[in-house]
Length: 360
Image (cartoon, one colour):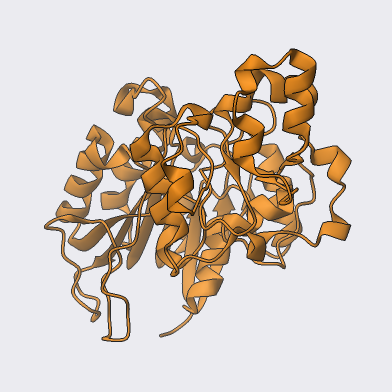
């Protein structure tokens, strides 16, 4: 395959660009477009040779697009209109305006791109925006496949269920893509592949990883989890196709532990809501931009002291005084994941450099 000219829309910090490199497909990003100045600084630091357009997509004319003569579009449109915890405004949300603009321009391009890859959150698959996307692709002569997968599907211990669509123009001589259904796992290409479906989870209630069955049946409902929650976490931690958290951690001597330890007020107020994982766990929950500022549903925290049993800390915790509770919780040495570790769990390569550190 010849070198493809790639247009990267909503380029962020370059996740799609790294994915292109990882795929082995010969391609050059001829333009990356985003309006987030912080993301653009990080993108520019990691891809200094890529033209970076700091402008709205609606501000790019049809003529501008045609001049790029791109063969592929990579894009991750704003997810807020489709998230389960948001208002789910869908196409009525102003943040979909740029995506609708792209769909309106696609049939009018002087040369249709040969390939399109789109990523979004769970919820997009049942949106009006998705229906309009599919309608536009069909009218333009594309075949496509949709899939819902999580990083756990490729061995990364992080549950982050996402929607992907890959489309190709019908004239491309590639393996047939079908649009009859949205897949929930990668199709296996050989007998050596595992026949089991990957575990795709989207936790809504926090919990701890307790691999031993007797601990799962403990009457201590720490993290307010149900028996079903505990069983689900046990299954996740026994999935040997997923790597352990410890493979994604920075060396202990390189982590400023005091900087990342959870402060006492967080421990006392939110102990039962924390999603606590250990280095040997094979699971963690999705990290959001609120990680380190908010607690519930923003990401897992790491237990650093393995000499302390989780059950011994939480048994009868509500019967202790505030000071006694704090002393018990401090034994676990709970800390936030570092920005580098979060990047690792999101699949970024070691070459990725965060020029602007996140604050915890």
